Image 1 (cartoon, rainbow, N blue to C red):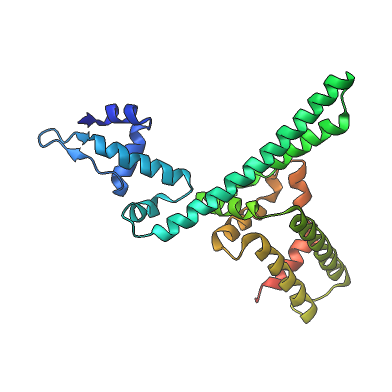
Image 2 (image 1 turned 90 degrees about the horizontal axis):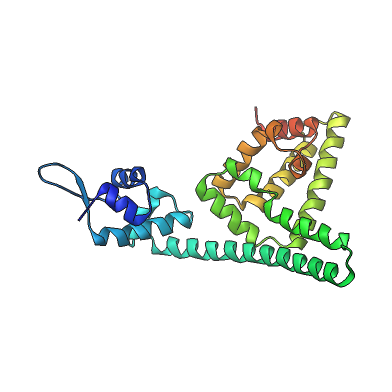
Length: 248
């Protein structure tokens, strides 16, 4: 038997986390009959490890209890498959960055002079891995897992097509705003429909991802400088689309 601080030290978690898991019914310790101290057994360590693993995979705590009971094994398989795709994507990006660094090292060793094109490639590969981190704070833990899973399926060809489609749509909306087009007109509604279709390409129609995206756009004045600002849009475009999507 272990008292709570002993068990926390053994398991490498905080006492606060154990109390939280107890409150949620995920890990219920025994209670000493006289002192009411929480007492943990060796078998509790195995269950705690399962909780920590499932949490790492992005499963909300509210769903972990049912998964541990086997009630949602199909969902667990889906999460494992998603996480596998995410990790493969990260490995691909890291391998690309490592490869660029190795080529830059060979160039430097062979000529004694740096090949700045290769060094630029190194920076580009690393930035591709990190340039979306700023947006993660707007998403729930569950939504982050879903976004990473969708990103793992995102190819350079899809990115090129999405960039082209968004650029054309923003230009079309801006032109409609300049002409004084009514957002509720047929032409305005067609633009709003194209907007929703492109958004669905990112969100997959998932409401949790959409909610995070809405939070991100609502806070665009606090976006960081650099690549993040390239996502910004002219105010007249934002106003036009909001009115086109409103039925008021």
